[in-house]
Amino acid sequence: FTYGLTTPWVAENSGPGDSVITDPNASSNRHPTRLDNYVLKITGDPLNPRKFYQYVPESGNQGDVFILGGWAKGDAVYNSGNSVYKLTLGFEYADGSSEFQDVHFNKDTVQWQYASNAFIAKKDYTRLRVFMVYHYNGNEVMFDGIHLYKGGMNSLTYNKRGVVTETSQSKTT
Image 1 (spheres, rainbow, N blue to C red):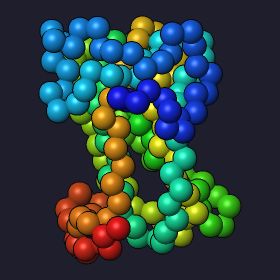
Image 2 (cartoon, one colour):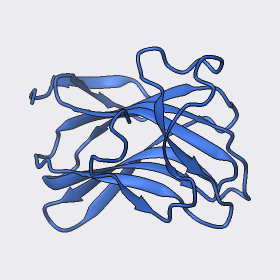
Image 3 (cartoon, rainbow, N blue to C red):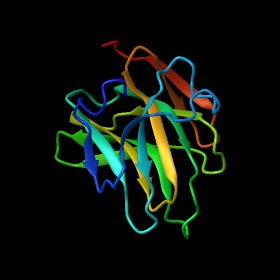
């Protein structure tokens, strides 16, 4: 977030103080070393959802593979099972339907953590959305180094027991 929110991040239900800041404890809290100290801080609200999202003007085909990942540091709280602390990739499909797939962060740590996951488009899509989500939570969270990669990696197919049954190389773009 070196350049703030000048890129088209959209705030949904943002609260006072939700903004790009310099990590105030960067030297003592093990901020990821390859990232600068500018982070998106979201202040939780146990009664409301909080998220920022960005449209990605990328269309493609069923079977395209994406990796969504990023860093976060939060002091999440449990709120009757309603609290959410994650990244989400939204597919907007050519048939008008949508699908959302998640990368969850561990609520049981207050340290910087990295999370990522691979997703495969189930249908042809017209665009994507990337979300940073901190719904129905207390305290603050900081996000940094959010990234989305397409293609250039192997796609894996698993059976019901979690064993890889097929691999294929996707297109690189």
